[in-house]
Length: 199
Image (tube, rainbow, N blue to C red):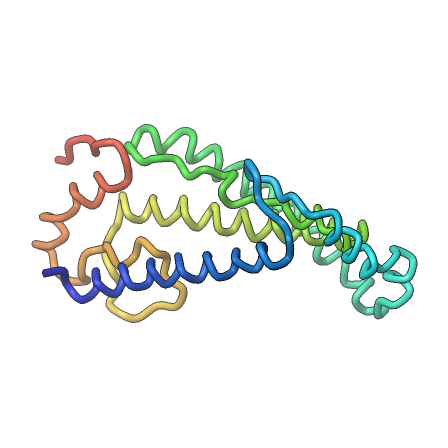
């Protein structure tokens, strides 16, 4: 019999899969498909969506001045995001093979499909691409950090913490040294290649 935590994790995965199926079922109603990772729209839908496009000049004219003035504060964050992307990618490339951890596939976290939407103007498409990149990099980094934590310190915290990653329930209980020592090699093996011998 599975422990209650594992059963709950299985239920959560099932619910996530059902949610994804429901979200993507809307695509069938809207007459678009995904072929080889690319969105394909029916021409009728493209024509309908073009009616909802707001021109760039109208978009700028109708924007509040404070929103426009805040734009540099948003866009200057590209520098730390690109730096973070580069450094974490370098870390993963160097360290994950040493630790025997399967690499996180960056492309799974960066999906730039919104630029295909005919109802968005150039500024909106740029904003969508920017948000996709920033949120994708955060998710990419989070998964790399989660795998690193699973390798080095798979121990739950004594106190409840907000925003735990999906690997967290696999960790050993806080204060249970026997469980930690007994499960550490197995937990590391789940990350990919066999873990090297520990002292």
